[in-house]
Each structure stands twice: as structure tokens, then as C-alpha cells.
Amino acid sequence: MTTEQRNPDTYDLDKLQTPELVMAMNRADQAVAMIVATALDQIAAAVDGITGRLASGGRLFYVGSGTSGRLGVLDAVECPPTFGVPADLVQGILAGGYEACHSAVEAAEDSPEQGEADVRARRIRPQDAVVGIAASGRTPYTLGAIRYARQVGALTVGLSCNSHSPLSEEAELSIEVETGPEVLAGSTRMKAGSAQKMILNILSTAVMVRLGHVYSNLMVNVHLKNRKLLERGVGIIREVTGAPEDKARQALEKTGDVKSAIVMLQLRCSAKEAKEKAKATPSLREIIG
Image 1 (cartoon, helix red, strand yellow):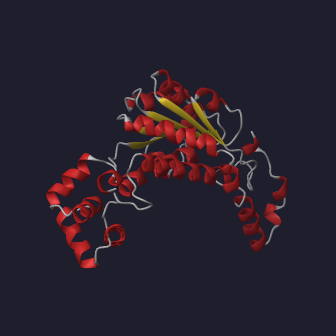
Image 2 (tube, one colour):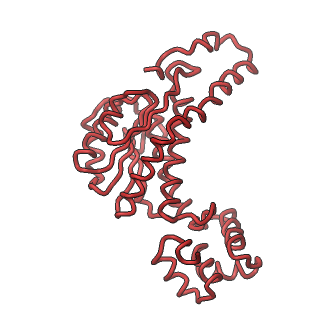
Image 3 (cartoon, helix red, strand yellow):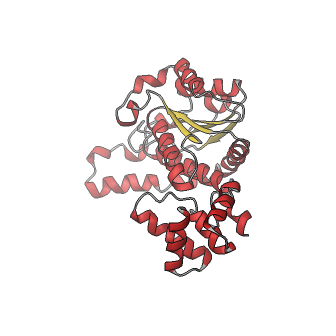
């Protein structure tokens, strides 16, 4: 596994002065985006596959251990506030459970049986999609989870940072990004983790765009949970409708959400009608053109 090998460019890591130390890490990170670019076709295939499952009433699950699992949890919890989707639409399954989010439970990754049990507990169905995340591509917990998910007919995707990995063999679709040796040997929270984060960002965002939860490049389903997001919501309404600030705020107060406020202003309908239309049709583009 190249992710576990020593990086010959950083043999003297502990001898470097601080500016050279941080430069070495930054130099390694600069390659990550280009490495991810080599897997864009694989990522696109996964986006289309996941979109199809979710459009049919399925859910998306990320499964992993350690850093890989935590990154999956992070991406999952960002989806409801960003795209206005139900909290159970995108879920993270982490080896060791919630405790592993803030405390290392490294031995949890060694059991394929536990991976299967944790996925089984979520009542995985054929219309669901399960993305297994493992830098090594051979984590037993993740392999067990993907193996079971595929057996029940769910779409399975393997995301790893080594080529020809067992995870790629187990999953129906694979995304492989060879990030190579880390600056700090074996510390896959670095380049490998950055690559995984980039790919998960692309996966979830592209899927939500395909499902109609985005209008143009605007988060029209954003949850207005604080002052900053409220102001963002007003700005989005003004951007789409061209309404002055006072009209945008009034529409938002009457409807309670950005999407409905836009519908109300664009179609010149009542708040009630706007909310009904917004609820019935996920895509704002389909409602207002």
C-alpha cells in the first residue's frame, strides 16, 4: 500500500526548520487536487448511481473507520442544513459509533462482522446507496459493511487511496485516488484524508444538484438557523427575483423558507400557494423556469 510507505522527500522531517516544515507539507498537499482529477469519471459514475437511488426513495450511507469514517459523518451532517433534506437521507456510519467521532477507537475497524451488523441495523434496502471509505482500501469493518450492502442489492461504492484494493473488488463502483506516501509515514489523515474530503464534497453536492436541491449555483434550500444564514437567505431571494430587500424579507417572513419566498415573488401567488408548490416539486427550476 503506497499510503503506508515512507516518503523519500521527507526523510529529514524532524530536522527541518519551521518554515521548511510547513512548506514540505504544503507542497505535498498541492498535488492532491490533481490526483483527484484522475478519478473524475469514476466520481461521475458514482454521482449518477447515487442520484438514481435517492430519486427512487433511497438513502445514502457513508461507512468507514477512523479519519475516513469521521469524514463521512462530517459530510452527512452538512447535507440537511445546506440542502434542506431530511436528516436521515444522508447518514454516516462510523466504526466504534458516536464515541469514535471525538475519541480514537481504532480496534473497531478490525471486525467485518461489526461492519455488517452496523449496516444491517440501518435496515439497508435495495434502493439505498452505500459508500465505503478507506484510505487503505482494505479495512475489515468497511469491507464487511460493503459486502453485506451489496448482498441486499444496495448500490455500493468503494472510495480508497490505493489501486486494485479489496474494497474496489467488493463494491459495484470504485473510486481510487493514489495519493501515495504521506509526509508523515502512514498518517492518512493528511493527503489521503484531503482527497477523501474533496471527493465527498463533490459526491454530495453533485447529487443534490442532480436532485434539484440547488437553483443555479445557489443554496435555495438552506436552513435559516442563525443570523448569517438568514441574511444569506435574503440575498438569495433578491438574487433570483430581483426584489428589493424589504420585499424579499417580507416574502421570507410570510413563507418561512427561501424556496417558497422565491416562488411567491416570481409567480405572484400567496404564501400558502407558494409553500404548496415548493413542497410538491423539489426542483425550483421546474417551478419558475
